[in-house]
Image (cartoon, rainbow, N blue to C red; front, side, top):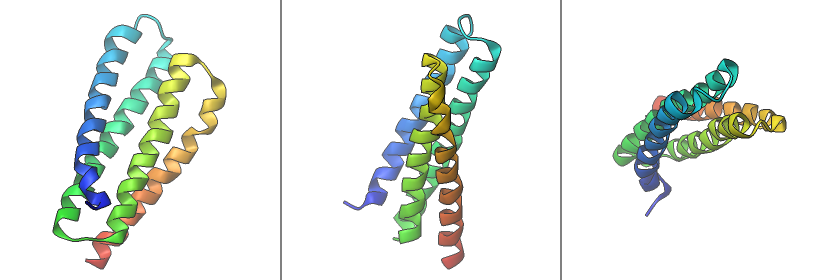
Length: 124
C-alpha cells in the first residue's frame, strides 16, 4: 500500500476532528476562554478543515496518477495540520506560550504543500 492510500482516511479523520473541535470550542470553551483565545482555537479548527479538504483532494488525485509531488503535498498537509492547528489547540487549552513558536512551522508546511500540489498539477 502506497502512502497516497492513507490520505483519504487521514483527510476524513482530520475533518472529523475539526468539526468536533469546532463544536467543543463553540459550546464548551466559549464560557471559559477569553474572546481572543477562542478566536485562536477557531482559527486552528478552520485551518484544519481547509487542509483536511486539501488532503482529500490529494488523495483523490493520487488515485488517478501516482506522483511524488502529490505524495509530498499530502504529507506536508498532514505535518502542517499537526504543527499549525495542533500547536494552536495546545496553546489555547494550556496557555503554554512557547507553543506559538511552533505554529509558523505548520504554516510553512501548508504553503509548501500548496506549492507541491501546484507542481503536481503543472506536471500533469
